[in-house]
Image (cartoon, rainbow, N blue to C red; front, side):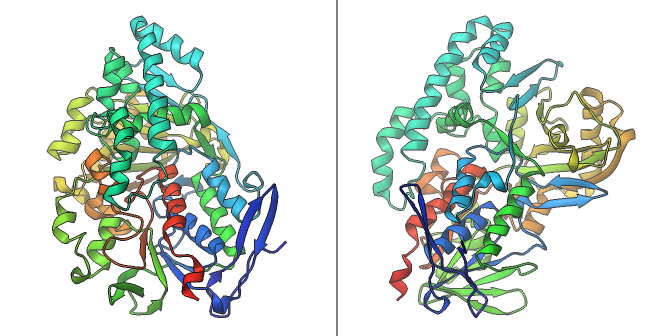
Length: 526
């Protein structure tokens, strides 16, 4: 069954797919009658948006600044090693599965997801560790060994997490929050969750031991947020992971990107690479298309930006068209952390290191204060160590391991001269890893590549080099975050980590799903 067409002008899409009563119906529209959508960026949000818009009946064209798809989920291939550039943790796999179903495919025929066990290993500075999973018996046993009095507290925390899941995810997760009325309607749920509290505060209410408080509150760091200031609504992550697990893709996260691109190719949706958008043309208060760095103009009925929201407004839309997201408002926002990522391959394997591991430093609160409040680069750090070859040896040459290690650092507000300090900072990380979990590391590194907040700004056009846009504190969430339907420009829509509902692969995919509800039906263009 063919579920795509290619229009004469090179813009693809226009097919409609619906599932009813277990049967699949694929509808086709003629290319000439379908409105056009230009999608800026091929990250998870952009790819998901392009698929959903194509199915909705739009003719879609994607434009990508880089030479390959993925955005933050770009893939680096070097010296026989495969390095996922960014996202490595897959939760809520059904959000990916939906995209395949919309195109009449089975995800399982294209993407091989493996459940992680444990989800993460958290290694403390004293050498002890905690294996975090959704196995209650294992979790309770480990908690009892560290702090018996916290066993009941953990159970109570999971009840609170379930409450946040129901009120924050199930009831509010797909709300576009386009008006203050949406906020008013959400207020009872926010009050019941005590959403003004931080996630660390909520955890501390139930858990007393400092190690366990870290274990139960670190998740926001993976989306650029400070556990001491991010809303406790994010406690819902515990419930999400307990329900659906933490997965990794065989072939790396880039394998998912590749298969989503193939879905678009099969639907006739073209992707142009090395095509940076430098301006969204606005006429009469409406987006009319985009201009590329080459000066080429591409007209469109709607424009969808998967680029960083702050960068989109500040650099792609002229100031006279922005009454809401002005330069002043953008500048005074509190932005997520920056990320220092060292990708490296070794000529030996480290079988004791699991797929996902947190290697914590001597400080927790003080380090977070330096990163998020003081905006200073500290000499100490805590690390996320990713070893995908623990699950998929094909990502490295035989007998070798592929790694990346991520250090949460200040964004470019710190004034750090990254070109000057990159090598010394990387070597300091290598020293800590060598002395803790990767013996003789420096002697065995055979491939190396580094990314800094400066690269996030220069290469990915991320405002202030922040990894995830605005920090997900309460007053920068929901209605207070850049909306999926632009508040300034008609016909402009936003998806991705820096818009509603937030960062992380699930939220980014949800932003594209929300987009379905706010873009006009194709019939309105007839």
